[in-house]
Image 1 (spheres, helix red, strand yellow):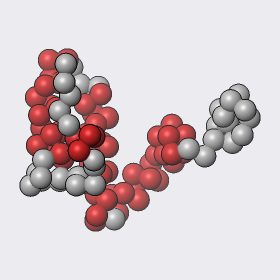
Image 2 (cartoon, rainbow, N blue to C red; image 1 turned 45 degrees about the vertical axis):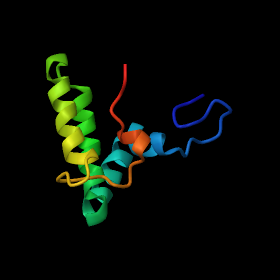
Image 3 (tube, rainbow, N blue to C red; image 1 turned 60 degrees about the horizontal axis):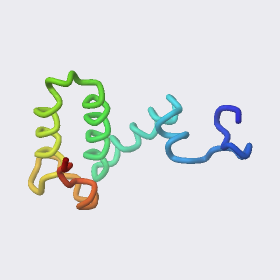
Length: 93
């Protein structure tokens, strides 16, 4: 299928395609999040998660701990209370 279309040829209107894979869509969605006070923490979390994906292995544990305390812990500086308990659970194994 051509870019922007599903396997059956239908135009892809998914969030991932429009707001993650497409640079202009990503930029516009991020600006929207940053411009709405109740969504600013979500914008910051997204940015930090992308940075986490690119950090060195030696830095991952400390970075994950900072993410947990800042975004996933009630009382954290930018707690994202809209996330489910499953999304914020510490990985096991």
